[in-house]
Length: 92
Image (cartoon, rainbow, N blue to C red; front, top):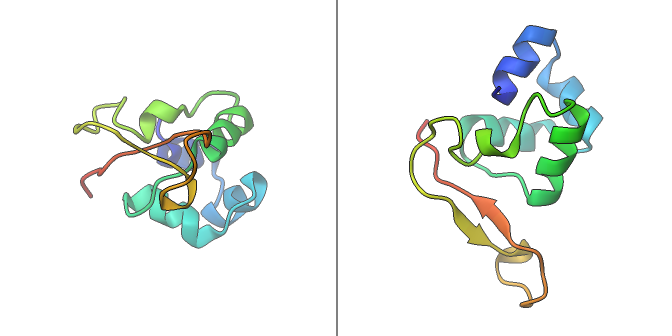
């Protein structure tokens, strides 16, 4: 299930959900429009918070988003020991 569908079905506002997972509403809006991509840490929080109704694959093309995911490290570079972050250019 996509985050959009989850919020719609449960009648949760973006502002409310952003507060619940600890991000700014502008950041959440960016994810939902494909302009931004959540970190793996935040994806894990979203999955846990939604009882896995929304999964990381819905952000990286696992639900038919197309394209291939790219991997980046936090801060745009980072040390080799930093955990990778998955992002994808998702058509809007």
